[in-house]
Length: 179
Ligand code: 5GP
Image (spheres, rainbow, N blue to C red):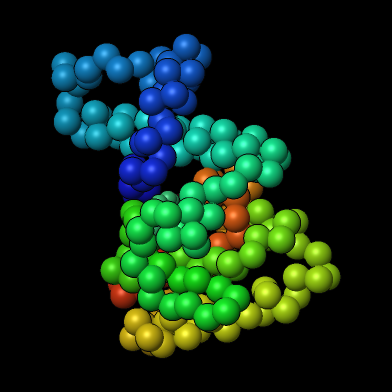
């Protein structure tokens, strides 16, 4: 079940209000008169809808080439728990982990790589470097017996930060298909 991301929540008061105008599910009216399981299902729908709306809003910003939260993490303007770093990439723990190990791996220079689908031939080297760094992160984190590397690309995949990044996930049994 998709968790509500704190990061998404930060932006969601805007999107929830926007959605509320169109979507009665997003209205903040309490649903206490409904059975518990139904309320849980409704809040899941609300969280998922929020996540999708946030992803769409983030995609609009991406087109403007706006800096992202990851620029601040690279510049150490906001704190993060770094688990891997070399001259080209930075790996740090996700603020909203979806597994016992959840590391975000990014190129230090975005160089137009807001998302994988924007990759060009000149990015081949950094893309390979990122994948190899993912293996090193998995090794460092002790999850070489099984881990997953995810790239969310675009609003349909719920990408929320437009600076290419790999999610390195592990430390629990993964399921397939992913949500
Ligand atoms: P996406 O949804 O774009 O594939 O992934 C973005 C990831 O960045 C999310 O998993 C989210 O939790 C993470 N994230 C967003 N903001 C921050 C932050 O300020 N610090 C850290 N460590 N992770 C963040």
